[in-house]
Length: 179
Image (cartoon, rainbow, N blue to C red; front, side):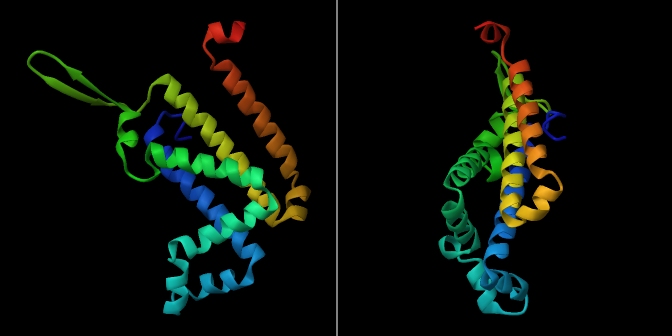
């Protein structure tokens, strides 16, 4: 809904959080030692330190585990995370410039911010939202394959990918659609 309403600057932070939550769930479903550390983090300082270990921490462990199971999915998710960071999942200039503009006159400087980003940026944001949703569902499939299949998760992914394709096609400039 954030993307559809044009709040493009808020989307990267939220999507990165979704991906990280999926990574944690994936890791804890595959590795009971990491799960135990997670449950003990508030009562065991060693557990808390290990969970905050950066390159040795749970997100790295989750990436390594997912990479062994599905390298293509991991590469796609890592690419999405990089884009999300570039566009504001960590505060930076792209978070502002994607929805702002300077107007310089002879005697004044006006700084505008937009709730609605430019059309191209809004479309890009919506597409990344859709791709991230599909990737999160794909990670959940690896956590609970039987349950995922029982609730027709693969059909949801297929339908989401199809709808995303239609959205992309509908939002291409007219001259590109003619090709």
